[in-house]
Amino acid sequence: MSPADFTIHECSRPECGLRYPYVIDFEFGESCPRCRGETQIVEHQKRAPELINDPSETLDQKIELLIDNVRSVWNVGSIFRTAEGFGVSKIHLCGIAPTPDNIKLKKTALGSETQIPWQYYPNGVSACQELLSQGSYLIGLETTEKAVLVEKIQAPSLCRWVLIVGNENCGIDPGILPLCNQLTQIKMQGRKRSLNVAVSVGVALYQLRML
Ligand SMILES: [Zn+2]
Image (cartoon, rainbow, N blue to C red):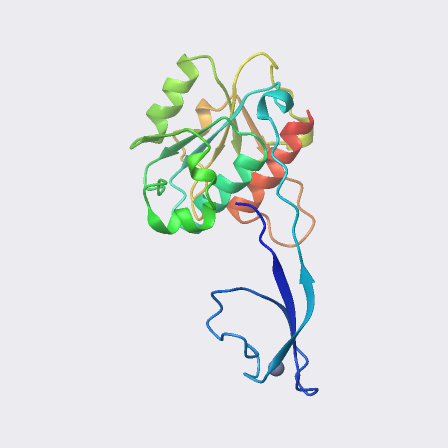
């Protein structure tokens, strides 16, 4: 999706003063979304056409993604968009994970679902076994004692890497964990031990791309 021209509006009521980008299908029309008062245009932004990368020039290592039983369409849609941005070459969807056939997923994936080849498997364990037999190197993203930090992963550079994420509440399927060639985790500094699954895929892909 290419960024559109847009205007910045400001609410005319001094006691409100909301400043926001105006989007054409805003449910409030041109009135202030905070106080419903009148607004005025304070900036008019013309956008240059979005630059398109040639993936063949930027990719030397093939990275694929396996999404097992991630339940939320928003999470899977967001993962598609992130994966497209980082040049993921294929997405494997397993179990209850929604596929791009789902209308709601198209909304969050913003067109990226048409750019990445994907395949659905009802059983994530057999999907992993199949990928292993094809010579893929499976990297499970899971917070466990055995997991190394993403930036310290040592994966053979010649084979296809498949980053695996599991369900929002249960994590990676216990039948998939022993099939992973490596387990990896993201260094956390807050009190929570994990990130939202779509966010963690973004962080992990960014770091895998640096290796
Ligand atoms: Zn207002």
